[in-house]
Image (cartoon, rainbow, N blue to C red; front, side, top):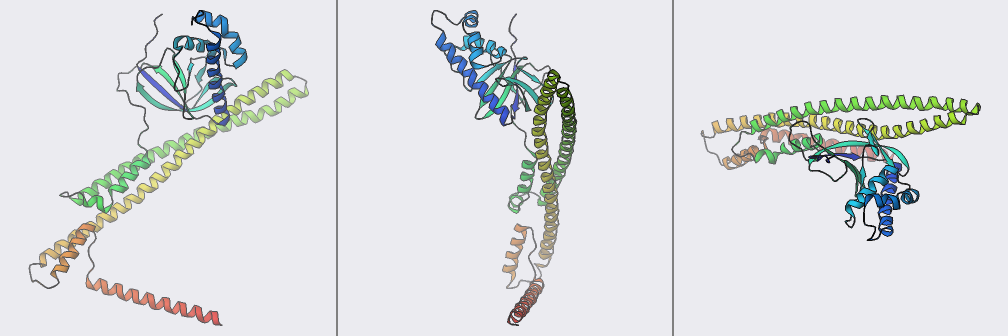
Length: 377
């Protein structure tokens, strides 16, 4: 049968807990030891024939490495196909017997410590194919991923493996775009129109943030509900195991303990998924708060800009009436007002502020004096 040639690679990014990571590291180490053993056992006369490899090395490798039987079989094929060519980055061949998808957030992997449950995220698709195997487990810089050769059923554009722009990043761009310098750089443009467009962008981001927030809350609830169900099943097994032990039915007790271990593995995976969901929920809440604050700022800027433009218009109407020695200063104040978007203060307002400052200073003096007198008494 001809080997299926896949046109795309689907990637799962794994998030193993410390125990699962240790199991994966030991499996990679055992796989490397298998290749070393094969190099030492084989001679040029033996060649790299797969049948010969199996007869000479299968049982020995199984006994000394503890690798799953299926992984040894695939490893012998891997060695025969790549003898003399180093494998980098480290990878293990996989098939449907060595890993399986358990649900939308976790999968099962065969290791030297037995099968483990590992949470995963779907990273996306990329063009290309992997190797002679249907899938592979890759270790690189302390991270793990599973690459699977696939052929998409729909005619669609392949997307590169990359994370989409987070809502917080988009909010950051919106905030930066509302800075005075950014608005002033829009030379020749209607600054009011610029800020009004920013308001529309902010409203759109707010809608997205609310949708993401709702999804995160639903995901948190779903995971928490499933976790409660599994925890209840695990606790219920305690009484059953004790009953079996009191009846000297160690076989039933052993089956109950085995089931508990499986449930605990699922709980560990769900805990990781729950932590990720809560982190995403927290980011969504922060994003929505930032968006609402940014909208308030944009509305204030728009009001100040309109007031500034009205002030400049009124000033230009009276500029032709008479020229005063202070006209130069007025023009400078108008320029500052135009650039900052805030109208310059008139003398009356300045006098009021001076009076307010004087009253505040006198009050501070009275308070300090009262404190000194109280200290003497």
